[in-house]
Image 1 (cartoon, rainbow, N blue to C red):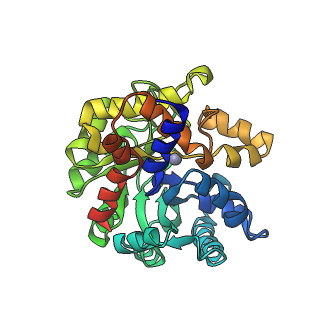
Image 2: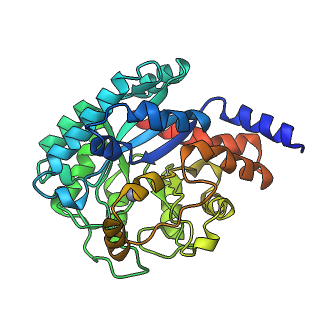
Length: 346
Ligand SMILES: [Zn+2]
């Protein structure tokens, strides 16, 4: 195929927009609360260059705010998201239902779905889950890497995370999510907690952003057995772009696609999507000392040079074409599989 025809094919595949179910946007908007407009000035051009159609925007509270400020920071992140979208109403919409997502897309707006990464903002108060639901929360992962009132996260090493599963509160959160219609996200949860959530729920389960342990064997990623469980439940695994390999040299778009093909090999084409977790921009904004602390406590992410922000999404699609995937399969990866989950839950 000539370069022109590949570009035309990418244009066609991107025309209906891509779905990325994990992005730490609210965190950055909160840190920039004294400089409104970042959604339009910084993020909007990148989303548009990559033809992003739906974004999962994750509420996340950094360690330095916990425990006292957890709820307050999360609420402020929601507030910042709404006020930034208010300034760009012709380009963005915060969506609470699949119909709202469809309408936003028909109007050529980027649909933002509010998600939560770690339930620290709830403390141990299940009532607050309902409050966040009213504010638009539609996907919840119980933990980040740390332990909280709901359970324990998988660590960034091959073994050694807590052998405990969910707490009683964690089980209540999962059941209440399913009842309210908040998608249960298995990203980050430790192996024992993962298994418990599978047994506690009935609806399709997802992992918004993760990688296969086959290529990077840490508990934060998921095993072949876990990938198969998600497939059997009709769910989707969103492939993460920052933990594709322990080696910087192997952190490439090719390796990213290896993760996608691995999930397809285990589950078929209907259970893989995108959860880029692009955070190079956020990471570089941190003071050097904080970056070192993060590296010591978690790990150093290895950003993929050709896939570090949404404007580079075409590099992924080009690679999928080069690997010989059909248009129909590429559309499922870029959009269709996530859309099916959003339609089933919201
Ligand atoms: Zn994460």
